[in-house]
Length: 141
Image 1: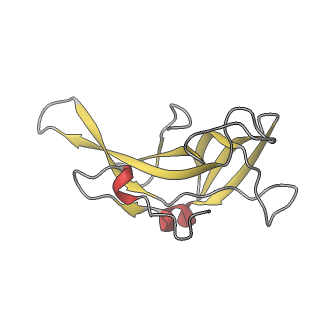
Image 2: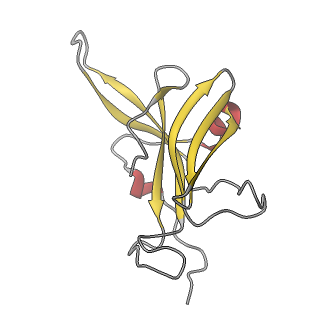
């Protein structure tokens, strides 16, 4: 899922966005959240596919990061089970993320643009997000 409609210029001929995933996939209620929990995020970029002299273009997924969560502002060695990045902006060498915490408060954090660039991995032609998701190493029992 994309978190919003915002894509911001990032590097040469690319646009940066933030996607989110719900874990577990079934989004069943639990004592902490009625409508899903354990959100994760991924940075991604898209780039235009130019059609020769045609002024129209389509876009392709060009890079993708692994899933991540943001550190809690209250407990930096932990993360909330519900985080939802709803805004992204690049200001100089910083990627600014606006996000919601547990559906009840907002926060802003920043990540160095070089850190984001390091997190992104190039996506081969004709590949999709699912082709790059790593399997869970130690599945819960």
